[in-house]
Every structure is written in C-alpha cells, then in structure tokens.
Amino acid sequence: MKYHETDNYSFLLGNNHYVYDHKEDENSLHLFVKSKPHSCKCPECGQESRKLHATYKRDLQDTPIHCKQTYLHANVYKYECENPSCACKVFTETLPFAKSSQVRTDALNSLILGVSMFLSNEGASKVLALLGAKVSNDTIQRLYDRIEFIDNPDVEEVGIDDVAIRKGQTYATAVYDLKDHHLIAVLEGRDAETLTGWLKNHQKIRLVARDRASAYAAAINAVLPDCVQVADRFHLLQNLLEYLKDIFKAEMPSAIYIKDGKILEQAPEKIQREKKPDKKYLSTLHYDNSPPVNPDGSEHSYDNKNHCLSRKQYKDQAENRKKKRQLILEVRQFWERLEKKKITTVARYFGISSPTAKRYIQMSASEIESMDSPKNYKKRDSPMNKWLNIIFKMMLDGHSDETIYFYIREQEEFTESMEQLARYIYLIGKNNFPGRIPFNAQYLIEYVMPPDVICFKRMEILKYLLTCDPKAQKNKELDKYIDLIKENFPAVLYAETVFKEFRTILMGNEPEKLDGFLEKYSNGCLASFCNGIKKDIAPVKNAISHPESSGFVEGNNNKFKLIKRIVYGRSGLVNLEKKCKLAFMPKTGKFSLQDLV
Image (tube, rainbow, N blue to C red; front, top):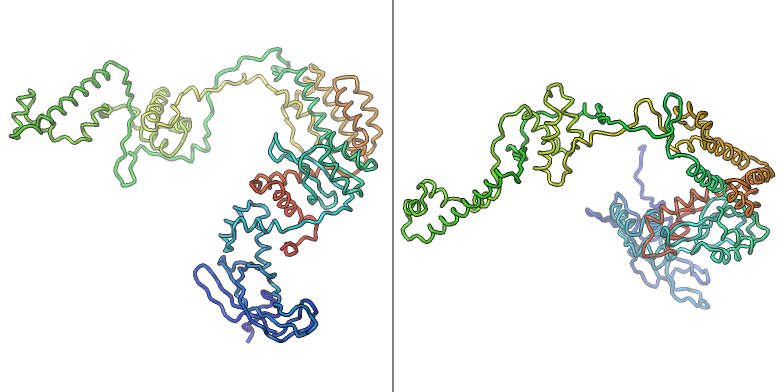
C-alpha cells in the first residue's frame, strides 16, 4: 500500500509517551497518555531506577484541536531511588510537555501568552474561549507575573523618549535598544531623577538618541559625561516649524484672496449657491409611489397633514371634542344606573337620537380615549400626492432630507414647486419621525466665494513651502500664484529660505555649517530658536554627523501607546511594561515563547 496508518505521536508528546485511548464529545476532546519506558533517572543522583513506587493521574489542558477543549490525561509513575546513599527516596518521572504542578501544557501556556500579547487579559480570555482554551483573566495575569525579563547592563546604544500613561497627567520614560529596537525599560516619571537612577546601572552606554527634553540631557550629562547624545532631527524641524507658524500668524492674514491676478485687500462678499446633489448616488436609488406596507402586508398609514393646533378652528374643535367626550361619559354612567335598560329613555333624557345614544353606550374605552386627538381626515387631491409615499418610504429607510429632496427633484415627472416639496418633507418628518431634525430648505444653500476669486489659507501656503519630497503632490493652483504671494508678503519668502537652509544643513554631513546658520538668524525672529540650539549644540551637531536617529523611538512609542490603550487597567504600570516588553521581544531575533513558560 502507498499509505500506512501511523500511531506515532512523538510530534505531540515526545518519544517516550504514547496515546492509548481517547474520548470525544461535542465540546471537548480527551487523550489518555502514558510513558513507554518503565525506568527513570533520579533527579538527585542520576542513577537509573526501575523500582516502581506508585502511579497517579495528571489532567492537563492542552492546545485546542478543531476549536475543542483538549485535555491530556497522563498516567505518571513514581519511582524509588535504588541508590541507598541518595537523599531522594521517591521521585516522579518528568513530562516533556508540562512542568511539575502545572495544569496546562507548555504549548498551551505559549498560546495564551501569544494571544494576550496585544489584548487585555479579559479580552484574551474571551478570544481563547472561542478557540477552545478555557482560561481566566486572572490565570493570564499569573502567567505574566511569573515572567522575568533579564536586564542587560552591557547595553551600549539606546533611544529615550517620554510616553503618556494618562495624557496630561501621568507620564513614563521608555528606553529602547538602538540596535534591534526592542523595549529595555519603562521608568515611572519623565524627570532627570527618574533617568539618573537607571543610567547608574548601565555605565557602558556610549550613545543616546533622544528628543530635545532638557531633563534627559541633564541626567545623561551628570551620569555619563562622555556619552554621545544625538538629538532627534524630526523634533528639530518641528521646533522650527512652530516658530515659522508664529511668524505667519503675526505677519500674514488668515486667508489671501486673488482676483484677476491681483491680491485683494479685503475679503470679498460670499454669494449664495445651492448645494450640488450626488447624482451618482441618486442613480442607485429606486422608489415608486406605492403605499408603504407593514411586515404583515397591511398598508401602513402615516400623517402628511399640517396640524396647526394653535389656530382658532383647531381650538374650537378641541373644545367640542372635550364636551362630546364628557357627554358620552355621562350617558354611559346614566345607562349603568338605569334599572330598565331602554335606549329611548336615555335618548329622551339627554335630548339625543336613539341611534346616537346606542352608539355612545357601545363605544369602547380606546375609542373614547382617541377623542383627545384630532381625526386624521382624508387629504384632498393634490399634485404632490404622487410623491408623498416616496418621501415617507425614503425616511423609513434612513435617507437624509437632503437626499430625498434632490432624488424627487431630479425625477423627470416632477413639475411641482420646490417650496411644496420642501414643505411636505418637513411635515412628514415632523409628524411621523419625532427624533428627526425638521427639514429646512435653507440647509441646501451654501455661501461660497465668487467663481472669479481664488482663496488660499495661511497654513495651506506654509504647507506648500515646507513640502520637500519631490514625489509629494503639491497644490497646482497655488503653484501658479506663489511668486505673486512672495512679492506681496516677505514673510513667505523668509520662511521658505529659513526652512530650506536649516533642512539642508540638518540632512547633510557638515555640522560646521550650523554655526553660520545660527550667526545669520540669531538677531531676528528666530533668536529664541537659535538660542535653544546653542544650549544643546553638541547633540544637534551629532544629529548631523551621526547616522543614528531616534526616529524609530517615535514609531515604537506609537506601538506602545496602542498596547496601552488596549491593555492598561487595574494591573498597573508593571503589567503594562511586561506586555510591551513581550510585544517588542520578537525584534531581537532570538525570541521564543517556549522560553518564557
């Protein structure tokens, strides 16, 4: 035969154990296993023993098979040590797939850690349950409590930055390895004292990539004066950008208006324009004027009338209904007291006809109660009647009033006035959908610039100037008028010149050119920016001459924050640190979940 059935389970249990039975039900799978050899080495003296002392069973939850809870029921042997001089008298054989005292296999513990790495403990517990592994959030926490990450005091290059634990209130300091970018430590706080204590235990650090934080600079200078500090180029450009924004706000209007190739001194008056419908979307809608129906197939009634209850006519009708209701109640009470039940007696007493008296007596409680509301009389014929069912059905389907308005207006058969259409959209929405915002045709009107006027926002111009990537798509309209804007606003040319000069120096390899830049701009609008660089001149020049950067730190912080938002809770900063360290460990290249369980 080409294929042969196998009973080799070494891939699952190791070479010394085999499955001798199994049971399966709808939700679980049970495998019964035992060892092949009948001898074991003493863990103390190492002598082989074949003297059986006893057997007992270990029930272990294993990784699920076909999303069913899977259990290994192992027959475990106890042996007596045959070495009379050995202090160990009785010992238990070891299982290759589970450590002593465990109720789960090592493989399942690895699965639990892998699933919970990017989830909260509670969330991981629910996901694992769907996969077929029954484990509580407290059990997952205990697995993390057992993990010990060994600190490496010989690390030489690190990246440091602060991360928000609770934005605006609580912060921590994250330290990353510059070589493989994994997380080394999470320190409570972001002041110099926090970092100083950690640096004292890592004296071999020779290079630190950091942002412009003065607290970190002070701590590094105090503990490791010979350490090379590299400022982050991104933060340097960001600092310059903040100053350029202030210059733009001080010297330029919020918007620039251009007409006929000239810059206007004042903003032109806006003109009214009706919003344009999304014709592509409207073409996907198809409604007819057939009456709306209920789930049971009966016609669904709705109110499309204008009930102006404040008018005298409606007030008089309401008063008449109140009197009539009172008369009906009196007739019914009189009928109940009457010994000889005769309709004619009631009719003569109240001065009404016998059929009317009979109808009042036979009215139900719900009919009497409905008299508090005006009757919904049949509406007279109107050209708009052929669109009312469409309006109601579109509202029922959740379409906006704006969509309904444009859908009906775009129909070839629609010849009625726009005011009538808007009025019925308002009435049907108001009478039948209490939570719906009443339709106002003014919402369809927008105020825009005259078509011959071009408007550019202040920040739009600044973004155009600072876009250096040749592949980036620039504003083609602004490209036509940028020279005109530079002629009229010197701040635009100044900002462009400053940014390009500083960026060229920062991205180059000649740190000595920075001195010329600082000398050139130290007495103008950028005096404060230049003074800040002078205080941190060595790390800034290192950013120019060294290939290292803390850019990866910003990326890692985003990952750190994502994990924090998912998992951070009652377990505190210690658990968050372990979760994040575990999440970054695969970057080291020597990581295995099996080593942690």
